[in-house]
Length: 198
Image (cartoon, rainbow, N blue to C red; front, side, top):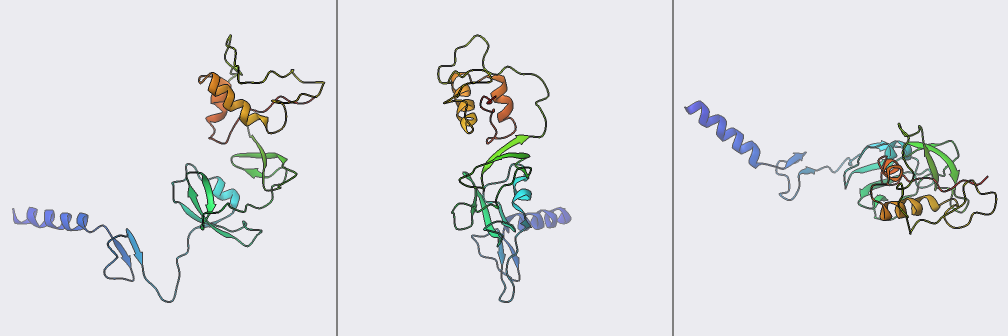
């Protein structure tokens, strides 16, 4: 009986002491981890912007040091609900995009001429099965009608950059649209392409 009491007491003591201290005997009560040093600093994981983008479902508050961000000087970054930001909360400075780069789980096929840190990425493979583009027999009032394969200037809904708004409009008008759901299954930033120019 005495042995059981000792084990229970040890377990209770271990569970009730939630702070971990490194180089400090009594960690601060508001911390889960308290590191104390006057001769060394904290070193978070170091990786490239591409490696950071490959992290699956990064937790809010996840911190990394992007080695090739901020014009190559590197940048401490934190994952917020709105995406990766520099540690001060400002927008991150990713390195310039180049056609053929591997980013965000795909390959860069278009680079924004006004800001070469942004562009469009295409998935490495087609969706595993054929899926319907819209909703069969359902008019989608918020989705612009554009000619198939153009020939003439296509206008709104068929330009580079319209894919994300078209995908959002398809899902607003028909939340079960198979192609739009297939694109979004790859992640919140993925969308269907706009109509292509001939």
